[in-house]
Amino acid sequence: MKESLELSQQQRLQQRLHPEQMLYGRLLEMSTPEIEDEVRRVVDENPALTERAPEGAEATADMDETFKESAEQLQRADYANDDDVPFPRYGSRSHDWDFDMPEAAPGETLAEALKSQLTDFNLSTSDRDIAEYIIDNLDDNGYLTRSAAAMADDMSASTGHERDADDFRRMLEIVRMLEPAGVGATDLRDCMLLQLSRMKPAPDVALATKILGEHFDAFTKRHSDRLRAALDTDEDSLSAAIKLILTLDPKPGGHADNSTDNRTRYIVPDFNVEIDANGRATVWLTGRTPELAIEESFIPDEKAATASRREREAYAFVRARHDEAQSFIKMLNARARTLMAVMKSIVARQKDFFISADRADIHPMILRDIAADTGYDLSVISRATAGKYVATPAGVYPVKMFFNERPIDDNDTSSHEISEKIKDVIAKEDKRAPLSDEALRAALAAEGYDIARRTVAKYREKLGLPVARLRKNF
Image: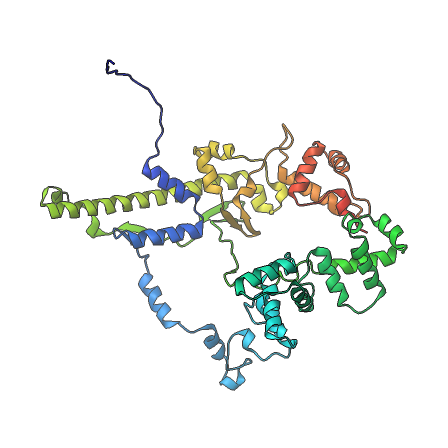
C-alpha cells in the first residue's frame, strides 16, 4: 500500500477574549458588596497592590481611638449611677429583660420549640423518641407529608429496634396538640381544621368547620352561591364563617427561625441619584472601594532581566504581579466609568420618574437605547445593570425596572404605565362582580389604552393578580 503526504489549507474564524476583557466583564457583573469583597481578596493575594490612604486618615484614626464607647456606655453616661438606668444591669439585650410575659428564645427553631413542649406530657422514653422523630420530619411550614408506616420503617432501620406504625399514629396526635396550632397537619385543609378545633364553640366556627370539611373545593373556587345553597345558610352567616377562615394561619411553622444560618438579606444600592430644585440630576456610585496603587517595591527593574538566574526569576515574579495589579486597577476604573455612563443615560431618559417617583412616568426604554447613548455593546449594558440597585429620595429600585417594552406601537406608553392602570382599574372594581380580562381591556380602551386582551392578561399575571373568579369576594 502506497503512503503519501498531503498538504492542505483550512480557514477558520475564531474569536478569543483578551484576559483584560474577561476581567472587565466579570467585574462589571458584580454588585457593590461583591466588588468590595473582590478588591479585598485581590489586595490580600497580590503584594503589588496597596491601598492609597485618603487625606485626613490619621486624624480619623485618632478620633476612632478616642470614641470607642458602646451604645450601652453612651446611654449610661446620661444617668448619675447604675440604679437610675431604666433597664436591668445584668444584661443589655432586650430578651434578657424581666418582662411579665415570656418570650420565645431568639433563634429557636420550630423543632426545638415543639420538643420543649413534650415535657408537658408524661411520655415514656420510647414514646418521646418517636414524637421527636415525627417533629424532625415536619417541613419548614409545620406540615407532615410522610405516613406513620414510612417513618416507623425508617426509624426501625436506623435504630435497629422494631417500631410500630400505631405508636407513630398515637404520638402524631400528641404532636398535633402542640403550639402553634396547625403543626403536624397533612395539608392546608387539615391545618385549618386543626386550628378551628382549638377554638371555643360558636356558630361561625361550626360553619367554617363544615365549609372546610365538606365543601373545600367550592370554597377554594369562591363559589359563594353554591356554598350558600349547600349549607342552607344566609349571606351574613356565610360571610362571617369565611372571614374566620381567612384569619387562620396557612403556615403555622413558617414563623420560627428554621435555620441558624438564616440572616436578613439587605439590598445595598450601587448608585445614588438626587434631583435638586432646578431639576438637575446628581449621580454617584456607592460603596467603599478603596483607591488602589502599585507598591513602589514592585516596580520592575529592567536591569534584573539580564542579570543572574535568581535575579531574573525575581524580576519575572515582580513583573507578573505588577502587570496583574496594573490590569486590575485599569479594569476597576473602567468598570466605574461604564457604570456611571450607563446610569447617567438611564437617569436622563427616565428623569420624570426620578422627579415624581411615579412608576407611570417611566418611559419605554430598551438596552439598545442606552447602547446608542453610551456607545457600549448591548452585552456591556446588560452586565452593568444586572443585579444593580439605585437609591433615590423616594426609595431603592432595581435598575432593571427602568427597562420596559412599548406595548402599543407608535406610542410612548410604557409597560409600567399599563400595569399601573390595570392595578388601578382592578382596585376600583366591584369585588362582588370582578372584571374579566375582556372587560379590563374595554375599560383601558375607554381611557385611550388600546391593547389586546392577551396583553391585559400578560400584565395582570406579571402583577400577581388572579383571574376575575378568584378576585371575587364572598
